[in-house]
Image 1 (tube, rainbow, N blue to C red):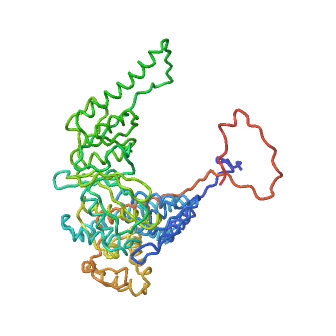
Image 2 (image 1 turned 30 degrees about the vertical axis):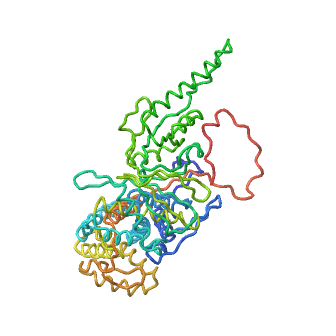
Image 3 (image 1 turned 90 degrees about the vertical axis):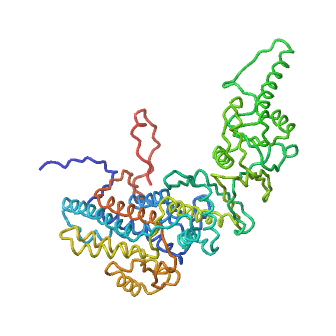
Length: 561
């Protein structure tokens, strides 16, 4: 008999085979259960407390999962998926997690003891799931309906149905209006009828506590939290201002390193000061030559430059963020200049109708509004508390993402679980014509798609079994594609009549990400964790303090949990 060869350290923990599959499935289901009640218009809010004592109250799937601190690797990968979905299309994170997490338990039907055969089965399942995904996307294409992006009423209905599940749905059309106004303002024509909306760069959401939510509005221009440099001497309101944007300091250049100057005569000191003053005066004259009304710089602005500007009746703002400066450039048509001696008349922005500094609460805000053709805008949100404003902002981001998706790809699919039921019915039909091991994954995927309408029915408190049976009956032969469940009342109705729609882009992305996640977790057959095991309480006496040797630095153990 040969002695067993130990490859891994004792401190390493290793699990493999069916045990890993079961653990992954359980972890994924646990994460799904956390956000199960946040789906649909009758969804509940979750209150999350972080380590610093902050509170997040939301029913946004991604916002909830982002705050969770989970230990299991499979659960972590699920949370990453919801983040991907949020970054890609901005909505549908809860649906994604529900779909992907309820797709894997079906694997347990065909677990076979030998691990090599089991791995083979997993690979077959993954391949079959990918085929099921292709069929599901084909069904989406078949039932999708094209919309006219310029028809505001249709767009409003769509955005409303997408944020009808959110907290702000109680405020009616308000958020949907804000989202559509913002995305139409910041949209850029790419040619061939295509439009691009960069929400992150060119739409800024400014939250100011106080006032009512109804006071929120989309500005035709931008606002930022700054006041003019010398409030008493500079104008705070300018109509049709000529705006100049700079990316350079308007003060004397300091040396790169510490610079020492040795002066032998007293007059040299005054010469040195005069040179500084002349340098700044020269800079200001180059700028004032173009007769601007407002000068904005991202860097510093010296007292002397401030004096020259106020004397010439020019308002100035300093130390503005780069992102805000880019938005102003887009809104009023100015060009950001790096050196005053390179200034041209075409760099001056003349597109703004009004520059004004207003006091809101305790702070001063500068508004550059009434722009002729702004390609950037600011959404001003007012509300009673910070928590409310944060939730409204999250809902607004989702609404803007949905509006952007429709602008990019103007296709709709039915909401209320109708799409999932149609896909499910088709996969069930297809599974009956498939022979061999691929039949199971098709059926499993079909059952998993039913998780969405089932959860909707659970959340609005109707009899789940009766409702699901009735819905499956209506969708049995792949007909009645627009029949779904009304999340408010639990009635089975036509989604076209109720105007409950979903964006094609969001649905397609959720299906793809969910199935790819299921495939990935199926193909994991081994988990090796290198975390040192904790000592049993009372085992061994108190250890002596050790002195680190030189060689110890390279082979330090990982920190225990």
